[in-house]
Length: 372
Ligand code: IPM
Ligand code: MG
Image (cartoon, rainbow, N blue to C red; front, side, top):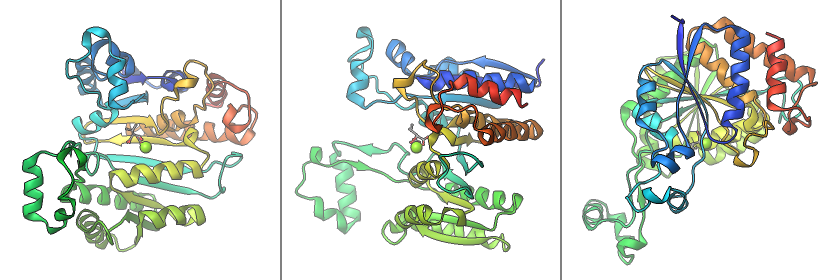
């Protein structure tokens, strides 16, 4: 029996291209693993009415780690139009598979390292090395939303909050409400992980990114809980920044930041900004980590227009694979993979179009594999 069983979910669009690239490097590393392919994505939405079929959920229950490619998501009405005729008007609703996986498997922590590698012409600066810890299951992603807003919900809000009066003139259909739900446990858990990481990797600061001056209750809870956790780590500074100012500071002085911790939506926003600082989405890996399962995916999407063209940069996926190897305890292989990626970037001979080159996804992967 192989040492590791890994679920491989290429998904849509360029997810398949970059997954092939990852496999080339995993094979070159001779990781002792059994790879089991699973179905996920738009194809299965169209033909089965479910982009994340039960058999895939079952597969994920049997593994510790999953490599995930990319997923296409479309707005509700467009999604309905693309369903096979026999499945239309049955009340099926498209729901993002990755968001569902995060919630169903309680993948509470989204870890997104953003690091510049020397020689990358796309670096915003050459000295950026930060890690985003994004809470991954709560907040505006909780899915508790209303449109139209039911009478009982309106009445309860009105009875309990004077500020609701301002919306009295709008009809139920003219109102939409999304709930930003935080739990104390969720806030504490993500803050704890950020500090633990800072301690393990000797980082000097953790910055909590929120907006408690305006969103008093939810942001307030997150910041207060983070402060409490920070007290347990006297050697690590806690910095506090509002999300808007943080975007500015990250463009101005990105090299000053070590570890960022944020709730779900702000973490989503800030991680795209950080990705661009280190060369764009082609360089940004991520891990969705729970207590029993880790799902590793590049931060980029499925880029449908490049499907099957082997054009996109596989580096995000290769760095994602490195994160998975570390999670599986294969730290030595993880470092070898990262060093090989860094060497190929530094040499600058084999590059995809985003870096000004004309090599394919797989040529980059093969160049990395040769260094292993
Ligand atoms: C991400 C993505 C997802 C998110 C989308 C695809 C649902 O933007 O992983 O950052 O919003 O979390
Ligand atoms: Mg995002």
